Image (cartoon, rainbow, N blue to C red):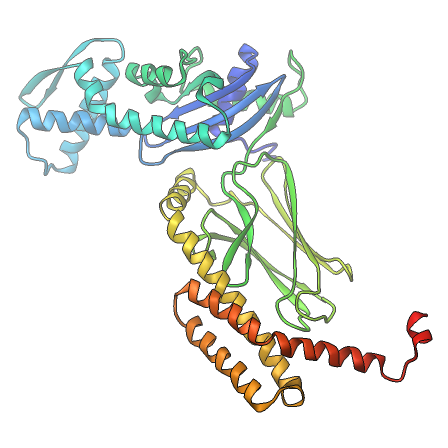
Length: 444
């Protein structure tokens, strides 16, 4: 099978409505299925489909409506909530039939076993109101992420069988201030959009010109830095295709290789992100720590394929890898990762600050120890060395704890205590370099 393009469901729905109705402006794709809810905000302009933001709720769908009605039946009929699987199945089928009937009727008759009753549309709407409100909350978040206002949304496309519920359409229309588009069967709109895109990719032209689809990255892409931190290179909701580059450097003197760990996610620590790939850049020329310049380039093509390349700018040595970030990743996992990032934003920020202070402290300790081993006896008095080593031990003790502010202060204190030592080492190096040379040789 020759796969021409991978197309997510909300984007396919936008393709269907955009071409059939020549829509332009900002469009919201409200996709409420049986078990999940997705919302996408797209900008449509002259055949260009740009996904501005995506969001949703993986624990929300029409099945929840069925369970709400089933719970009502259990309560009205005085049934036990501890039902066998067969009875539960029959009860949910009855609930689903009542839900579907209320799409057109104001009141429906409901029966289960020997019990009979009536359920009004108003009663059903009261049951599902909290669930509808959850979907609207996700919509507001997606609009905020897209950097627009609700008033800028010019059309709302309804996708998924559960959008046939009148209350859902009414609530969505009220939120966005316009009647949702429902002219295409919500169960077929995704397939129609995918077929239109496939027809275009196969080389068949349509009225209005060719279609250009600009999708977005659902989760940030980045790499691991010292301290187990996630450094984001391409943030989520960035339109693809895209290429971004950042420069990094070595941590230790004489470092000749660097491990590139590619990650996906929104959290600050790599332990909370998804590992995509690892590769090693070898052949870095021996230099002092921080002198090498390694440019890491992330490039995502229109199909979502990620290429990561690392290049040492001085020598030209290079290594690269390709990976599909979305492989094995469901919409539910994406939503869970986003939810976790929101819930842990405060603690993640504190954890990142602590790790950064620890890395700074460890780097300074290593540098000072190296200087002491090389020139301590020659350039320091015994009292000066004792004072420096005392401050070093204080920092080591703090690094074993979790007080980031104290680590930061002690790192500064150790740096101040060693300033005079660093100046002497510099003077000594300069004198050694100039020894035996006259002014004319230096000027030449």
